[in-house]
Image (cartoon, rainbow, N blue to C red):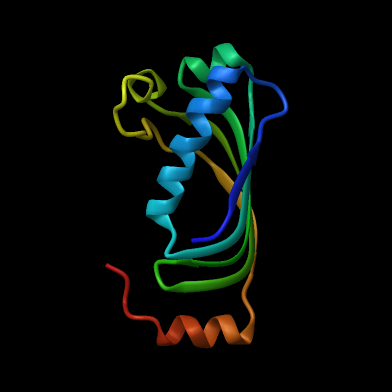
Length: 122
């Protein structure tokens, strides 16, 4: 997995130290490979510290997810509920409820062929 960067326009030092590494860890367990993965967290400190993240934007190039190869991907997730209080006590990050995601992907002919040649996920 290659470089992962994050930005947070509005946040405290606590949030910028705790949340991005937790998200980075979770993302690394979801993707087989990725280049230039970036994410941006939107929300006020109080919301995020309570475990409610109003919005996260992700973008990636050359990502592989469950054997599916993508040239480009971008997604926005809203109203995310996590166990941030437990994460701050060194527990794993967990999602507490389903949340809506919208996005776009670019799948080229080469991506499609690479996906067909990948071993089955699972």
